[in-house]
Every structure is written in C-alpha cells, then in structure tokens.
Length: 157
Length: 429
Image 1 (cartoon, rainbow over the protein chains, first blue to last red):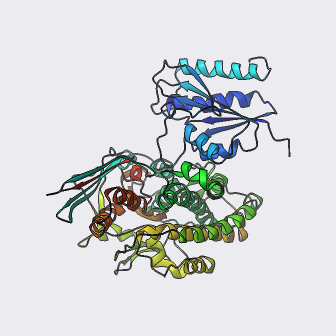
Image 2 (cartoon, rainbow over the protein chains, first blue to last red):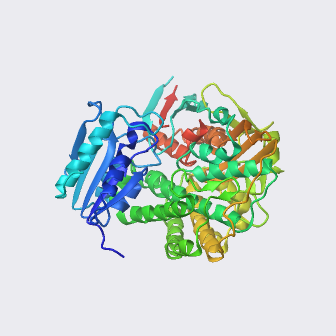
Image 3 (cartoon, chains in turn blue, purple):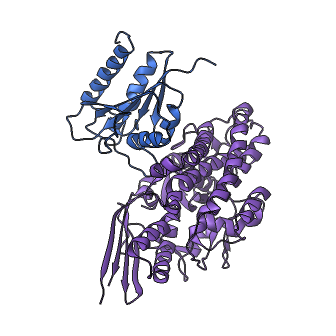
C-alpha cells in the first residue's frame, strides 16, 4: 500500500451533460500527469462522497462547472474554509445528492474538513445532453490545470 | 368565516418538482392535492425503436437514486419476453446489487432526509452540528451501499455493468469478500439505527392501507414473486395491468395509479414489511419487535423504523449472498430476441416498479409501459394528508405545515421518477 496522497482533486460533474463535464476533464488531465502525491477522484455525482474523499488529505481541490451568469470560461476560485460557497454557483439537480456547497457545509458541521480546501468553478456555457465541451470551457480547463501544476512546482504541460 | 393560507415555497428533502395544496373549509378538508408539475419525460415513447438490450441502460437514467430497480425491472421484462431465465449465482448477484441500492437509498433517507423532521432540524447539516457521530454513521452506511453498487455495477449512479441476461463482468470471490467486514459493521449500525429511530416521537395516525408488494415463497422480495395485497390481490406480474390502472388528474403531470374498481393503495417499505414479515431474517424480525413494531405497521410516520429494519435485512442478505458466492462460469445468460410481450416487476426502495415491453423478432421495442412507485403512492399521499389534516386541525398552522411536509417525506417520494421540489400551501377558509 502506497503512502496516502497529501492532495486530492475532487472533480464534480457529468461528462454527458456538455460543459458540466469540465470537472471530470480537469480530473482526467491531472490524473494523466501521474503525480504520486495527488489523488484524483473524478465523476463525483454525489457530494457525500466528497466528504469521504478528502478525509485523509491535507489539501483538497474541488473542481466543478459553474453557472453564475459570468462569461463562459471564467475561472472562479473560493477558499472553502474561509466562507460558505454560494449555492447559486454550483447547480444541483437532485435532493438525493449533495453539491459542492452542501458537501463543504456538511464537512464543516461534522468537523471533517482538510487543512486547506480550494474550490474552482469553471463557468459553463452549454449544459445540454452529450459529451461536447465548449471551446472556451475546454481552454479554461487547460489554464486551470497549468495553474495547479504551477502551484505544485511543476512545469505546465 | 375564518380564512388562512399557509405557503411553503420550497419543501426540501423531496426529490422532484411539485406542490401541495390543502384546502380547509368549516373544519373539513375539501381538497388535498399533490400537484406534480414536473414536465413529462417521455421515456416510454423514446424507448420505441430501441434495441431490447438497451432498456436497462436507458431506463436507469430515469432515477439516480434507484437505477438498479429500473435495470432489474427492465431486464426481467425482456427476459420474460424472450422466454429466458437467469438463475443461480447471477440471480444472487442481482439481489446483491439490489442490497447495495437499499443500503444507500434507505441510509440517505433515514439519516439525511427524514430524521431531521423528527429531531426538529431544517436539514441534515443543521442536525450534523448537534448529532455529528450519528450523521457520520449514516454517511458510512450509505458509502458501503454505494461501494457495493460500484463493485457490482461499475459505478454507483447509473451502473454500467448490468445487462439483460446478467452482468457484463462478474466479480471475483475476493472482490466480494472485501465487503464482509464493512457489511458486518453495517449490520450492527443498522440495528443501532432501528433503536435510534424507534425512540423518535410519532404522530398518532394510522390508516387501513391496502398494502401492495411482491411476495416470493422463499425470500423477502426484490425481483420476483407475485403481486399481492392484504386485501386479496395475488396475481402473477403479467396481470399487473388487469388489476391496476393509471388515471390522469388535472393537477398532476404524473399519472396516478389505483386498484381497478377500488382506490388508492400503498407500495414501499411498509407494504413489503406487512406482506412479508415472515420472510425477514430473524435478526430483522427481532429488531422490529424490540422497536415496538407489530407484524403490520399502519402509521406512515413510523415508515422510518420500517426502512431501518429493511437496512438490517439488506446488510444481512448481502452477507449471506457473499458468504455463499461462487463466481459463475459466464457473467450472463445469452438471450436471443423473439417477438413477444414481457413483464418485469421489482421492489425499488420506494416500492413496486412495473415494466412492460413489446418487442419484435429483431428485439426492437415496439412499445413500453413503466409504472414507478411514486405514481402508485400519489393517491395514498393525498389521502394521508386529507385524513391527517382533518384529525389535526387543532394544531397551529406552523406545526401542521411541518407535519404535512413530514407526511409527504414518509414516502421518500421521487417525483422525478414519477414524471423536482415541492411548494406546500394550506388554505383555511
């Protein structure tokens, strides 16, 4: 059994709902970098699993599509420990699943949050059925991955 | 004449979009409507022209919380149409993935959606601040159910490994043995859950329901058996449409089911429990008795205890299956299509889920009919509300509103399945 990765990237979203697939796309790109200290948990549809996923990590990054009315491709960044995440940014289409905001609040209520929790939202444009991701959203995903690799002291790909 | 209006714009912890309207005039409830305005989803229409093998994957998309139910009902229906039977370890694996769905769905509803009602919290997050260890226990239980679904189905939401005829890939013995310790913990946690919820205080309310569920001669039902009721129904699954009908009511985009020439009936945990108590394992029966439940529970608010008893059952059943598991020679039975009609019925966590398909010689679906549990329970929900409000008119509007919302959540309704969010309005005239 390898050492527990100190960083976890938790990618929310549905790869079959257009730009909602940007979370899993970022997850896929980071996983492809093969970083031993970074674990990627992708295709999270239920935030209850996120609370479990960050349980043993020191730093957690949550990545999801956002729908706030900003320009598509905009990268939003929140410090999940500093303040509640506005629910209007991250849509949840079911009461049987927790979204980004609820999972963080649940973790906070349970005293189960990592030392550092950063939330990235990439503003989506088109959430219709199918795997296609808008060009500007895909470009934003690349920028975010480069930013994270840079933050971890690695050369962007 | 005194007039009063209570409006709740967002009734949380219920899946789907709809609203509730209760009108009271001269101490009588004149209307109790569960008005569903979620747009129709047309699944049955777009099943036409698709290949019979696609049915489990397409219909699973109807629901993110009970996809296994849709996969099982559709698979059984297609196998019925093609004259095929899936038995042995493949059948056992189907029951096992259903156990995963029960553990995940019931744990979510008991701990996160329904318990806050009884403890006076708006939601599970508020409850978690005061009952952190309890919520952690619920989440851990739910995760074990999800993990079981992933192990067998490839992923927890809309599994991809089940198919008409069985599975695309069967798990190894080792894959399943990894669940023995977690499920042993889950069984104990479920027993503790029964004790915990049995200590809640319940409104004094009972109804003489017609309980409709599957009943199998040898086992607590998931996927096979006759459709039975405590009021005389005992029919094979293929006679479902001779016994039950769906009607359209103006206030709902979802059809409402009823027993032909009778009326509303109740499907779900309380119905399964009432019709199959003798088939529960002793550990679940004992837990129910210790919780003060008799063999039949008629108080819908106590459905939370029955769900907890079914959690005990699901953990016990999962352990039994895993302990007896031997990997099958092939992960599926090959099914050749033939023209015909097939019926499938399985017990989704929320109740009976009926599927009927007609396919042609090439296995192309000619027509489809799906009757989900929440459309079967809509009339029972409305009748519960009518009788409950009439009996409790002395309560303050605030308390009555709270308990009406709770009465809807007794059913863990999935409005999305039946055709999202509820808007509750009580009008006192």
